[in-house]
Image 1 (cartoon, helix red, strand yellow):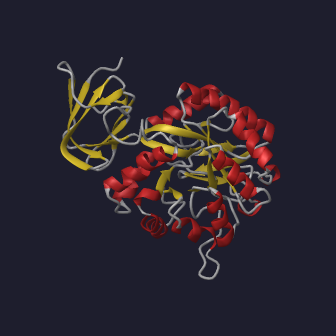
Image 2 (cartoon, rainbow, N blue to C red):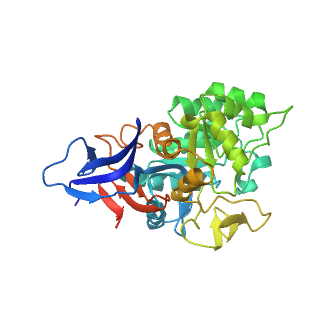
Image 3 (cartoon, rainbow, N blue to C red):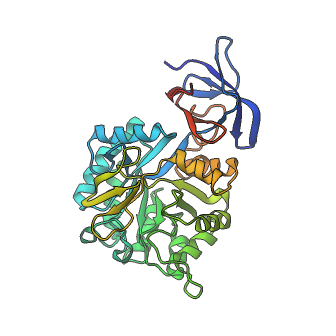
Length: 379
């Protein structure tokens, strides 16, 4: 059972800044403002304590798929990412037959009800065949609002996000539908023009699904969706910082144009995350993972990632030169706010869940706590 603990001596990253020789008080499953007399003290001198990571775009890990696995498979994938610091995860699906996706929504919604996942993200089937990436073209369909509503209803209140190509027939009406039902409309896998993207944002879209990837490149005469998504203060941009999906210059451009308040670092992880190279299935498509890079066997398109958020955190600070505070905003606070869960997670404040990550001076993960219980003990 969770006991009272005082995590002392670390650099503690709070919404207001970083405390040197700070402390975090954990009482039961929550962060407390004061410590009971019998609280255990854990000396974390020389370490960082940051909020637990929040991943809003994740297809699986540990050899398990959120799209097609059993309940036990989904839980295995969730646990794999917890071991890497992701204390809150949204389960993402990939394109499939509508009846299958409705079935998956039912299964995943039960896990969301139990608190194992934070909700469901439907990535496809309402995406452009021109920018399908690792999605089966045969199963794609236009975003008819009735079909979109069918998936949202099947999730029983746990649909958090739907990625769609708003330029397709029904796209703008579907964006409005999602906004009206409190579900994030995300622009992605799209061949939209700049003007069409602006129209989608005005209709209620608020997220850019893995910016740059699966959309037209930025052009000086036809700026396309990238410029529209970066310039609008209403949009949070997802970035996959694994060194494969984005050149460091592209990452820097997006982060500094959008600002730290408008970036959500994601994994877009598939089964191989935290597991290893080999052959996998992503929906109905076969994927080969070699040297930790996932690509479709047919065509060679990048097929998600094998990224975990502890690696994304370290890379952002040590390679890209982001401040620890800005990285925390992008990997914890911003996605928690998007999910409407910032009152419970995303920062180290009294009353919130005791979800936190311990990192050493080189930003290697050393400990993970979720709701007051160590998932990875720091020593």
